[in-house]
Image 1 (spheres, rainbow, N blue to C red):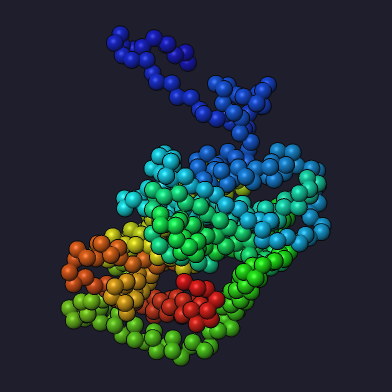
Image 2: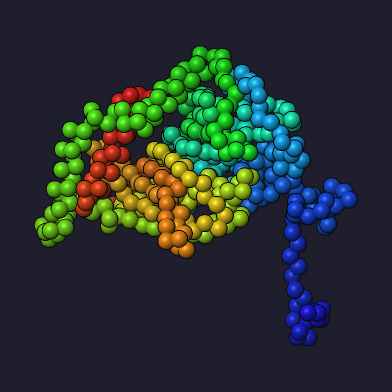
Length: 452
């Protein structure tokens, strides 16, 4: 069909042209590095990054050389890495700087309504940085072997130690602190120096621990990773703490600590159910300071789009954490009736990959509250992501997220007599799930393997 180039009406303005800022990496390469309209042709590994935050984009660009040699010019039947290397934490240490004080556009991209950094966007960047660090540790610097696929397996803990201002420069520093046979733990610290020039330890605003696992890019099976040789006393201590966390995860997975909690767990389940049954059987007589778990639920759904993929073509784990955080924040807000304040990500499990085109459903609830400290009541939120396939009439859990919030002090000060409700279960399944999460948190605290 031919298009008339003249305007349809005499006085109508000409159409505004829309020009892509980047040429497609899938097209035939132009004669020079500059494509049409003077744009620079991006390599295939960078293409998804243009839809992410500028920090995530920069981090994925840092990985480009490693992945380009495989995706753009893969050696035929490239063998896996045959000899593992010894690497130090300093070899993987990477930092990235946010110039909030001078970069107005960057500052506006990260600003939340309270003039602090948006935690959801920061979660994306943390995942991207942890991935870049894991790639640096696993790289063997040879173009004759196929690179490993490194995927986020879980997040052990992300703790906010103080509010993060969006007007002050920010730096994230991270390194590998422990490796197993095919797993890697990366510790990240978000550093924002106070204007009074206080000690660096006081400048750590957030700490995070990510677990990545290595897969053979051809077979998809677990692949061994380079060994880690800690050098300094701090690196040795971090390695030992991470080793303890890994042993604890194995015991929890195998049920090794289950029996010692069983009697107390059953008593707590019975107590919670007794309160819940009053709500179900005699609602008029129920405790007005409590609420049923099912009445705290929220949900949202989305179709996963190509712009949300990572450099491996699957949905970016940081994007999933971002969406889960936003729903958890909304759940805490609706529950408390006041603006919540994020404290920590207690745990995240990446159980199954999420692909472009998947129908993804996020379901949240308040699992339990802790009101022992009236100045900082705690709201514990669970978010579960389900991949739903209507054609097959099936749904499966892809991710579980656990967050802890409190209420912003300035918001609480405006409401006299403010109290957080207790959450009670309506079924034994809900009661057991609540107690399992409470026990998991108590176990981590008593073992002393994760410091808040």
